[in-house]
Length: 148
Image (cartoon, rainbow, N blue to C red; front, side):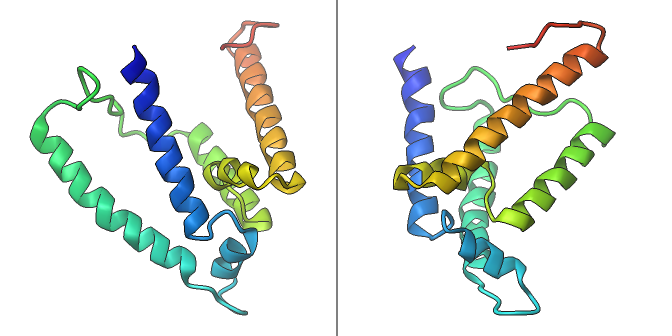
């Protein structure tokens, strides 16, 4: 039980530390990367390349094992169909990221800086998640119920 809590916490701390050290909690860095016609900043590209350099061999090694280290099985998607709801969510995510320069991981890591901007972003994100769950519950014929 402790391992099920400790491993994700440790992974989150390592991820957040990496985001902070690489400057990804600074919206100017992210927006500078997206500004290809202006003062372009390649820092996010370097972070992405570094992430791929770790992720690709990591996935290969994980597949060679057959089972994860801390779970009895891998949880992989069963369907390869692209549905409208995640596609629309991806567009909304991308527009928001491009307008403000935060996505959930860096925003949560930026909370450690005790500034009001990431706090405002995280609160707005939480409200958006809550509203999506409420609307999804209603559209599935469960008025008033909000899934956990």
